[in-house]
Image (tube, rainbow, N blue to C red; front, side, top):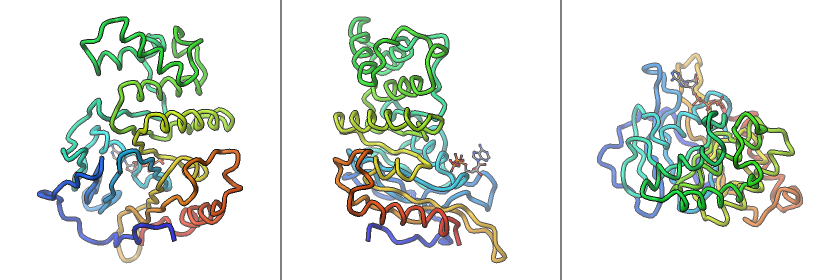
Length: 287
Ligand SMILES: Nc1ncnc2c1ncn2[C@@H]1O[C@H](COP(=O)(O)OP(=O)(O)OP(=O)(O)O)[C@@H](O)[C@H]1O
């Protein structure tokens, strides 16, 4: 049906991916990733997937399966125990302004205004730009997320939704090749969440941005993602420990022009939703 990969054999021993040839057709290539905070008990193992330029990919899985750990490795903020990440054919070995990250907590500098928070990112990316050029760029991205009236306010004067919008503008304004979103709307009420989802979708369509996003919300994934990665949790059983991993990759068959309001009227929506929910309810534990 939608899967482009059958469930992986999660007990397969993980070989280091050294010497593998990067695939030049994909923006990001992840090969044989595992992470063990406790030796011999990797949280996940044998995680491999690719991100194509302009693709929006969501990853879903129960708490603790390792989604944030994977995102941190892609961002270059953490290292994998085994495996490799290539971006544009070059191995990711540390953080870079080529990858913008939006965290669940907005991570803004509280002593700076919205304008100054975003200008900080712009001047890090383009240190040669003059003040006026930086300011024009900042104002463009603040307008894009609908925050122009609050541009000279500090984070303490903003609502949670407004702070997340600043985080999104800050990540987009450096024109990253890849945007990494760690449950950016998790703490927002349903109405604000819906509005910002719409804004994000419209910016992504305008900029053709490649996005990797963690979410716990099945409808959010169906609305935003071209593909949904389903992750299983590691499992301790009588037979021993089985690490979690990439259990299934689901292609979203709904038209890309979908909008939140009519999602449930689209052919295939309930089938897709039931498939993902069924995974989370009954198949999300590695075995
Ligand atoms: N620095 C660390 N040291 C030790 N264990 C860690 C560390 N970071 C994460 N873990 C463990 O690794 C596992 C995966 O954590 P991670 O945050 O990646 O999961 P997650 O799928 O993003 O969870 P959630 O959905 O709750 O955010 C968890 O069991 C967590 O306790």
